[in-house]
Length: 272
Image (cartoon, rainbow, N blue to C red; front, top):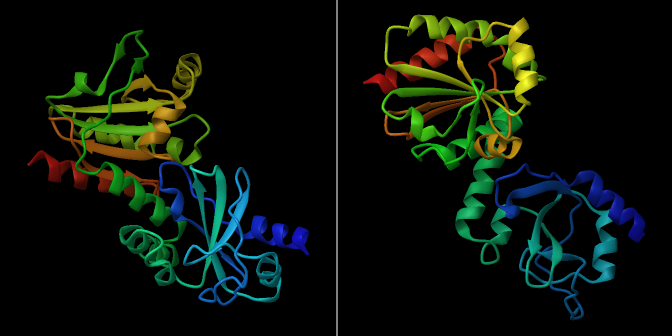
C-alpha cells in the first residue's frame, strides 16, 4: 500500500518552475477529510518526507494509506529548512490552508488556478514573470557581447531598450526573428536599442548568425541569468531610459507575425 501511495503522489504532483515560492507547487490528488485531526500524535521526523493536512497536522500511516481510496485531494509541496524535510500538505481547497499558509500565498494560488483554467500554463508563467519584474530595475550581471566586450544593462541606460531572450534550439524564437528585424528597421532613426541575449556559447551564436539574419545587437548571458529573467523563451522586456522594466511579453503568439504589432504597441506606449 505504501508503494502504491508513493506512486500516486509522484505521478500527480505538479512541480512548479524556478523562481516561485515553494508553497505554490500543487497537483490534484485523492480526497480525504482534511479537517479531521490525526488519531494519534506523530513525532516529526528529520531528513525525510512528511505528509500533513491543511492545518499542519502530521498524518498517520493509516491516513496516508486511505488516500488511494478517495479522489480530488490537492497537494502543496514545500521544504522545511529546520527539520530538513520535504512536506506534502494535503487539502481539498485553498481556503483550507488559512492560518497555515500566508494569506497572500493563498490569494496567489487562487489567482493562478483561475489563470490555469483560462489560459493554461503559459498564462501562469506570464503572471509570475510580470509580478517579479514589472516596474523593477534590470538586474546586474555580465553581458558578453559578440565583439568581445563585457557590458551590463547599465551601459544601455539613456535610451529605450528592447531586450529579447532567445536560444538556438527555440523554434518560436527563430520564427519571429524576421518580424524582429522589421522592428529594428521601423525604429532605425529613433533612440531605441534592440538587444538580443542567448545563453548559447558565443561560437555557437556566431555560427547561427552566419546562417540566419538577426539584426538586434547580440550578446551572451549565462543560462541561470536568462532563467532568472524568464524561465521560457522567447521573452521581450521593454525597458525605459532609467533601466526600469515597463512591459513584458512572454512566449510567442500562435500567429507569429502578431509579435511585430504587439511590440510596436508597447514600444509606442513607452516612448511617451
